[in-house]
Length: 152
Image: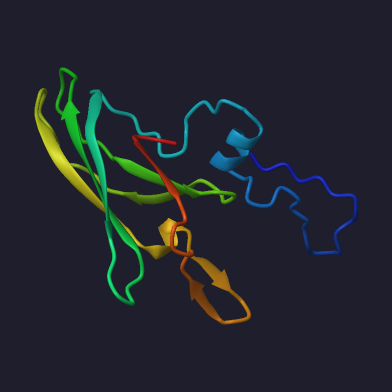
């Protein structure tokens, strides 16, 4: 939800949004509200199990950081269905963000597939520096929390 509270009246034709980044799924989390359907929720006639989540940091001299995240997805239901694994990222003090997602092929009951998702520098905490006019990658040693699931 977006909740706008302002102590100053906005000029005509403008709006003041005091919630900052806490809109949508972030607003629900920051206000400890359980949404009816979480961000990324999709309806399926099947269910899925995630296992073997791995993340590999790709780095090199002068290269921006990248991560390849991989997970095994198994259709544990009784009907065929596709799944959309989603990787969420968060650096200390920053917002939790959707970093990558992909859709599996239609999986038959009991079938599993290995999925790889690539996360670039922006998903790993790069911030836009207005003064420099460019994106700046986080400093070496910055920890990034990765979460994977079917919705936020």
